[in-house]
Length: 88
Image (cartoon, rainbow, N blue to C red; front, side):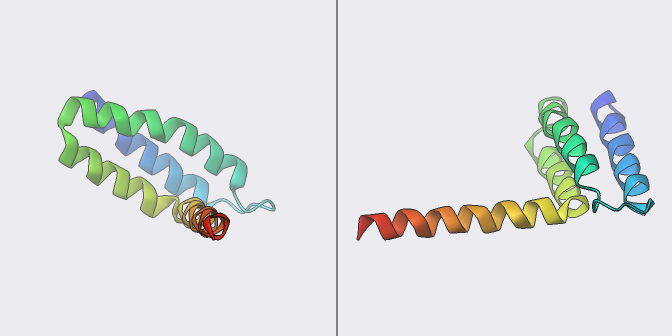
């Protein structure tokens, strides 16, 4: 197993352990740290193992961090609607 996959699995375990701890701020500071570490890690996994494994790693990370992905999707949709209204 390559170093990038070992690091990705450690990231997944850490994300799951962080999610088990109670938090008054709904885990957002931890999510920001996981995103900051996870994005370059997905790039490293893709570089070492190819695009299919990189997409699998991306899907695994998105399933762990589903609320930040949901809010990003909602924000992008809102931006698209705002751009559409300017054209009219």
